[in-house]
Amino acid sequence: MNFLEIAVSLPIGVLGGYGAVAVLNRLPAGWLCDYGQAPSEELKSGARRVKYLPWAVIFSVVFAFAAAVILSANGYLYSAVSLFSLWFLMVIALADMKYMIIPDQFIALLALAALGLLPYHASLLSPLYGLLIGGGCMLLIGFAGKLIYKKESLGFGDVKLFAALGLLAGPMGVLMLIVVSSLLSAAVFTVGLLLKKIKRTDVVPIGPYAALAYFLHELFKSTI
Image (tube, rainbow, N blue to C red):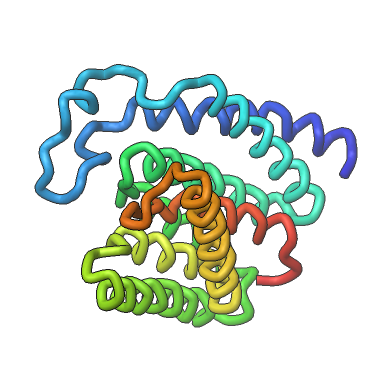
């Protein structure tokens, strides 16, 4: 990691962190609702949905660090696609934390970003296998959860999110993302139960943990 990479990463981090919060605060209200659901008065009011402090600062620091590491280890094309994907995931994480919704528009952007990684996959079929494995595994997890808990435990937005991540990360990568995000969400859920901040019947959004898992994937991976 050289001085130029660090110097470039700092403004990228600030733009990315503050931009993610600004974009979520300005998204059309309908993007943050389930199909057929009318936006609430809070969503339509134009009030700030997410506070700039501390979230913009936290995301800026994390995004600057990610930019520095990714730029130092990869070419500019890969780094650009990776950073755009991480930025889309930051917005997804915020939306899922705040409203338990993953906007389809940002899943579509993730899928489009995957086109830029085609030269880095083992074969042209690798992204397709990743899509099928990512979406298929989440469908199976959702079906199993419904059988066990007698209610919906996984939204279809989560299925689409991991299908898009499969396009980005490939078959082995998306399996790792599923395992890591599941372990992270389970750990947070367990701690919440012990601290009595979460009830057993509560549903934990998976978007933030998927974003964190992909962040770790990009920092520590060697090949897709």
